[in-house]
Length: 265
Image (cartoon, rainbow, N blue to C red; front, side, top):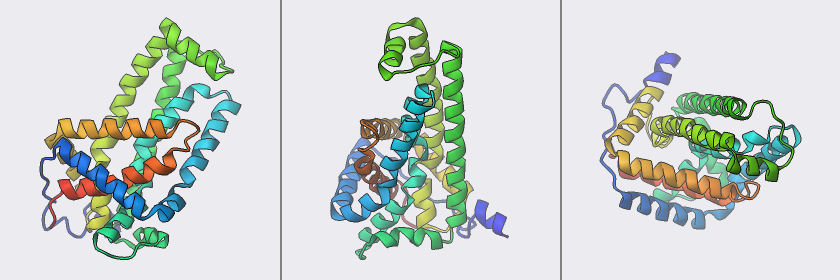
């Protein structure tokens, strides 16, 4: 029974969620509403997202201190893959504000009591696996293009990447494969986590709904993916500090995008 609930969910037998085609104006509206949530609940958001700059600094230190500098950019872009899961608490705060309820940072942990929590954790684990495979692929791409050549300084690494044929191969191959990973993550998680939080459904239904949305509005969702990736990269410079603002805004905005795309039962 637990396995059945994890994959199917209690509400799945009734009907799959209906979705509507979304337009770029819906993305703008979601971002505006996300910014509004951030302004209304800055203290709660900063508390939840302080872990991101800390983790980012640790990752940067590992890259600089253990000769894995070539993985620094993949680590930065990897936030695109795991961000939807990390923002689960932000969805809950947006949901409470939407309902006119008081929102305290402790309310973000109400997700632990959600009937779909097992499904949320399972989907989060899947995104973490995708993230790990992306790092492994990035490391393989570097070995294929540069070999085992060590890199000591960021300036030297950037010079080789931007001025050599091997560097341009790294850029083209890395961005090409990275796009496939990002597309996979976007397809299965665009609205799946908000849906799991909002309704008692399983992983299969949540992923299918997200994929249906991406396939039904490919241009708009591609634009959304570019917006998310661009803001996360900007927030990662310098030293990931900007993620303390970018992450909550995108998290809240994702909730409102879900509301625009998935028809209320």
